[in-house]
Amino acid sequence: MFVDHLQATNFRSFEQIACSFSRNVNVIVGKNGAGKTNFLEALYFSLQGNGFRTRQDLHLLNYGASFLRTEVDIFTHGADKTVAISWEKNGKKKITVNGMENQRIVDLFGTCYVVLMTPSTPELVKGGPEYRRKFIDRIHAKENPPYLSILNRYALTYKSRNCLLKKGLRESQDRKLYDTLTHTLLHVSTVIQKERQKTIEKMQNVFISVCDRLQFPILQEIRIVYSPSQLDVNRKLLEEQEIARGTSLIGAHLDRISMKRNTKSLRIYGSEGEQKIVSFVLKLCEFHFLEQETKNVPVVLLDDFQSELDADNFQTLFEFIRPKAQLFLTSLQPSCVKDSGRLLEVRDGSVYGEN
Ligand SMILES: Nc1ncnc2c1ncn2[C@@H]1O[C@H](COP(=O)(O)OP(=O)(O)OP(=O)(O)O)[C@@H](O)[C@H]1O
Ligand SMILES: [Mg+2]
Image 1 (cartoon, helix red, strand yellow):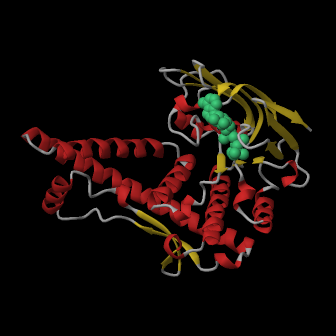
Image 2: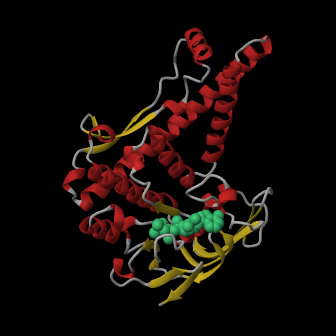
Image 3: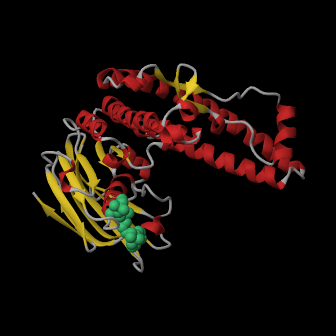
């Protein structure tokens, strides 16, 4: 897919953005604090309906403004589309696609394909298992949008169950509710574990073929290892322990996904450089996986990408995606890539474009 034009009002530090893009490389330059990441986030929001540095829309609203709006013209699944998103303070987000109202985030998942790499990307390997679970779940939701509602159902059940456990099972109806929530949690966990297993198997194949093509020595023998949590446990004992601890001790939120070399976890034994490269390689896998599964080439957003890697690794990873994807990257220097298609400069709260 391609993004041809972005318009935004009151998004973070920008009162207005109006920009056209190259279908190849777009470089966004500016000094520290100029608004480069804000610009990339505006683009991400306009395609996915959320910011990538916050879960709250209020943080995205220009200080003092009462509403924000974004509109993008895109080319996806062989057709031109316009996606508009608006949000008023304390109101509900409104999403329209080609003028059709009442679209949901899940509809954007099946329309717009974006792969994002930021300075937090290395958390994918360095961080706890929740980062890798979220990574795999999001990829699967992009390939299969109804999976989002399964994840939402899980999150709601987990939250209600924890509230109940915190409060304590004092009355007989509490125990009934506990049993119902346990049943739902286990049922949804089984579905999630099946989906994770399938997605990780497919990702594993993509990972092996990307590693073969990149030929980085440090990628040798590295694999994605999935260890689903145990769902078949002694229920009586579980109940006692959960009541004592006041939290859910069973379910798919305890699944482990690790990056391992032989049996050693990269999170624990890997060097900083290895953790960074493997996490960016996982993002390349996301790109190839989505391309393969959705028959649509995702747009790639790179925030401060080259500051995370040495010059050779940056070039290798960059050239790997460049021939296929439309790229947007932020940088302090305009010369960060050779033959950049379009240069956009962020200065004094505005974006200025040159060819
Ligand atoms: N909702 C908002 N309204 C107005 N300004 C905001 C809002 N959110 C963030 N800002 C401001 O936007 C400015 C630019 O932030 P941004 O992260 O985009 O800079 P940057 O160009 O990426 O800088 P760096 O090179 O340091 O990464 C910051 O000074 C921040 O205070
Ligand atoms: Mg930045």
